[in-house]
Length: 251
Ligand SMILES: O=P(O)(O)OC[C@H]1O[C@](O)(CO)[C@@H](O)[C@@H]1O
Image (tube, rainbow, N blue to C red):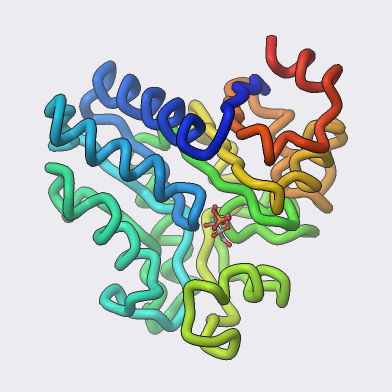
């Protein structure tokens, strides 16, 4: 795991966007694994700006998103499909038919999980997967305690995750109880993983991550066992990570 320190959210977003843009330039038909949440907004803004100014093209890129709420249709303003269209896809030249997100309104969500897993395989796997991190260390919607071996699956969201995401909904009661998420096994097959963290609310989780212990209590800790992980975090997110750890992972 390699740590890149950023001064703040803006710089974290720029550094992450640079890595994604380089990936797309080197391999124009890349499969990008995408994430949602507040952390990603700055990155998507940078990608859109770069597309407008420098013409980086996504015409041949394929994207697969990490997760989707069960019960929210693609045109629901809180669905992750809506988020992706609004913040990225509508502003770059990717055909929507090349963008994939689990279908949260499928009649058979178990079958949908299997279909999604097969879809990722049929695309040739993920070249670059972007991840945010939950306050409890979750990646995608893989909550603490989830075995590392699980592929795409249905999850019951913890009250703390529902609470953390309630800010996007009219009220806490409106936050769905379930989601479909790529499993940790799915995420770990990605050839390169980029984890982003910003802000003091992520500081305690980042301190646990950089302790280095691999445990299902902190789902993101599995990334220590992956050969190609880059973490970009700002100073607030790293505020509880001791200097010696920053040096070890910063090399
Ligand atoms: O970027 P945020 O909003 O802090 O969310 C962190 C992570 O939590 C999720 O929103 C799921 O709760 C992920 O999609 C995201 O990567």
